[in-house]
Image (cartoon, rainbow, N blue to C red; front, side, top):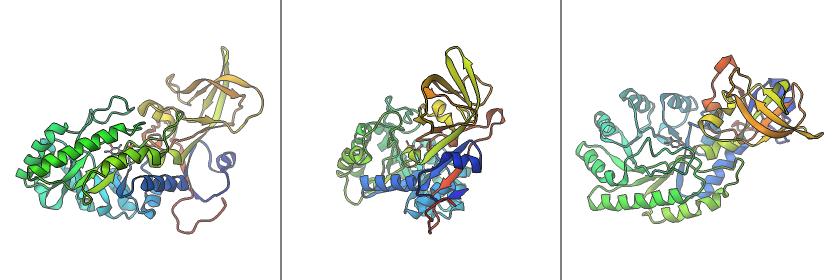
Length: 383
Ligand SMILES: *Cc1c(COP(=O)(O)O)cnc(C)c1O
């Protein structure tokens, strides 16, 4: 579904025409986020990590903006291929791959891969002359919501040994990558990781194994219930740290959440209302098994709104539609009295939401409605 609008979105009208639940994806927000991060990280190639929102409209918009892509699975390869993305504008960043995954990406034409241990290095021996590798380092980060350095990456002190092994195997390791963890609310981890990478660059140079690329991963945060720094301010110390690398070093990043989170809004409808104790329970047609799955998997609580502000508020519970008791979106929330058919809006729901939604209990995933998509000629108003 595709619409164009520059007037405020009338969610009631959208539900009347398209049904409920919906996820409303605003292409203009994707553009804004991409442009803001591009401006905050000049000279850094942005590869959008598809994982938080693998949707063709996002790919099309970013492609129009000149963006590049960070892939991890065969399904993500299919998605960018269907959108006509240049495979040379893609990197494959999953540190652990089957041989068939490597061949699938190579058949598409993506030739840059990430490795972090000797078993993965060995997998590239048959493709040594067609591939460029990034060695992923780990910088453990217990403060982030999602600490990706536990599962992936070699320790910085192992890097030189792996670079030597790669050289002995005839592989082209072009540089280093890392991921400091998602929703990294302070840039300190990025800065510390970049500084450690600079040391590895210097060691590698001294050992006759010069490195040329640095990929600083994702982790750029957005404001949910708590405000984070504006991205320009957030990236200032990162820019300073990157400036210590020689100008010829190719700089890359893999933003996911920052690009997609603010671009999607959940619209759910009240299916039922019950007074239980002193609380008013509202049963919505979307919940933690659906678009609100990020509350479980991504440990994120989303800003909520109701498009009704009449009357006094009551202590309320917002629950999802399934028959499971875990399926509660929010308790002890003050809301005006809602009736069956009223809407509840979830903001900042573009990252790790729809992507991890299930159809448990046969409640279908919310349909994504695209506003302000990627067609070259945009109209002013919803038709
Ligand atoms: C998930 C992931 C990303 C995106 O991370 P965000 O925190 O959403 O920016 C980037 N790179 C890799 C390798 C990932 O696994």
